[in-house]
Image (cartoon, rainbow, N blue to C red; front, top):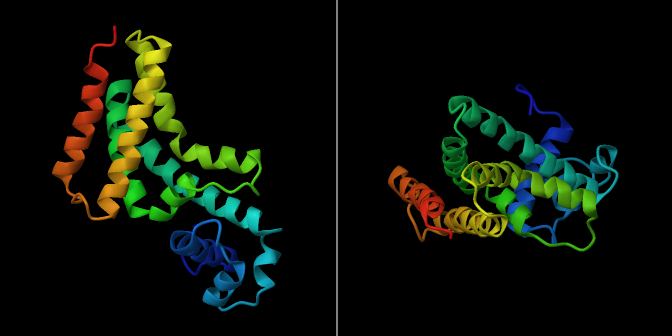
Length: 192
């Protein structure tokens, strides 16, 4: 979002993030968001055609925030898929802990959303997916093993973020190092 005084649309998106965090997608209320922003119930519909478009805008905003962080991490670790993967994983956990509403978006299921929404939602984890697959290809892992590695990595990422957010694990650099070490170890286990 731009610096300075946020526009009504930006304020709606910011409040929409809070709404998603508190109520999830199924109980998402445009009326509550409008009230929180001090605008009429009709005001959000000047910026978004419907509730689904509003939620899609929130997800796009999350994708842009995560995209900025990913580009920074990739730039800091050029040339090594392995390092990029580990540092992206570490930062992804931090991002999901710092922004629990995006985690709730990732985990939500709403039949009223179409394939375009699902594509937007999956973009949050697209880079980790690509890096896992690229690294597995670089070390000549069979495709069936790559799928297992992807499952394990994603499980560790989402599980760690949830456990840190729930207070089951502390949010410390040492814990993040341990989680990243588990991810790294997964790629060094024999697969044949």
